[in-house]
Length: 246
Image 1 (cartoon, rainbow, N blue to C red):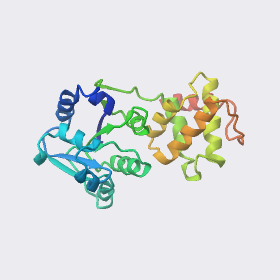
Image 2 (tube, helix red, strand yellow; image 1 turned 135 degrees about the horizontal axis):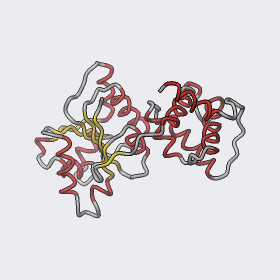
Image 3 (cartoon, rainbow, N blue to C red; image 1 turned 90 degrees about the vertical axis):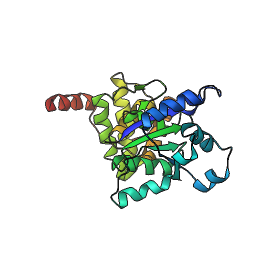
């Protein structure tokens, strides 16, 4: 299983006052050099000496000799070639869905033994994914509590509809009905807990965006028209099923 950790850039920099000590904390977690930096575009990295990625890399690995920089996209080769990187990988500011999926698949395939992600914003979905997988926030030295088993069971039901897509049709029906059913049991109608659970069971960034959109619409008062997929007492049924497995 891949060891995961992260830090939000704001917590790393703290208005330019904390990069040195925070980078030392990151190095302690990473282990011995060389340090492998996965970036969006190596060419841009090499020719932009004032870029955010370059700045972070220079603080985390002050000696250029200790830095090996490559494109995030190269991580996809590991699974195809059945290779594993034992050295820790530092992913700098990933954002695009394609990059995030590449990272997720590499972690899922255990192609990387240790991954640290420097996150641009605490509201980026990559943070929710990391929290769902139990990553350590190196700023607070804490992990997000594991998702409720019942919520995980619901997330698995949603993931089973991935092949249909979750923005419409049967997939949308499943998301909306389960969120409504759980809300009636006191669960929050908020994207964060649902997305953490969805990522915990192996969900993808592509479909996570659909879940996030639907739940935000529900929070705003939208009443989605859906076809019945589950019984009215679906949460009670799921609770009994979980109890029977224990």
